[in-house]
Length: 296
Image (cartoon, rainbow, N blue to C red; front, side, top):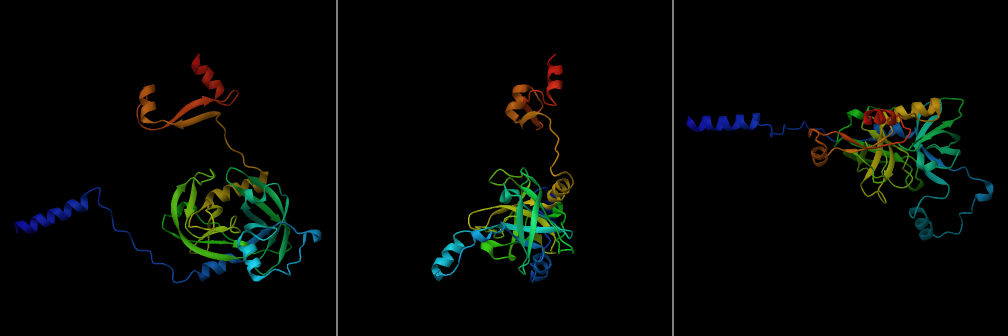
């Protein structure tokens, strides 16, 4: 009896302990990603610089080895990456860095149809650019999902044109969030291990239901299992502002901030509860007047 009570007490202690980790509900791997891939690939385009007749080169004369070396050493001439249509009226999004300095582009659909596109606006901070395609008929478009619901470990697809192969799909999971991408880009990026090679930057990151949860903007060398995407909720907000204003308006305090570490808190006599330290105030900035008033 005593042994039974001891065992019962041990079980209760483990169950009530704050260190006890509840068992995760198993999420089975989809038997196929085909429905999600079929739903998204018609909305994903190759992104190219319009070719002029004088720029065209005769591809004949290349041996098989020379062709493969040229192909897998980088993107074919004129190809930049990928874009995804988010509005059937002809609004597409891509990475702003891909089209830096360009005003006119071409979107190439999976079936080969080409659509001239112009740049509506770009936001360097989030690395998002919006393109406009003039079309007389609605185009297949992807739906933006709720990226706040995306969890580490969720299945995702990266869709793009790696090395010029349009509408290619690779599967992986969300590896981490939030993340700061290695190039210092958007601070709340989604990290994934889905293969993102040259030509897939600017394409969508899609959940198992076919909804876009992110826009891929950075990858490791040769798709080595690490890539980063701007969350869809940020894409939605930035795209709306670029379409209506051509730029993104942001608030500005005019201060240089840094984390309030325990050491700094002790030095300033502040309670050690975390926070932000205003390290400097920009001259003639919004905070400058209040800072001078406080000094008096």
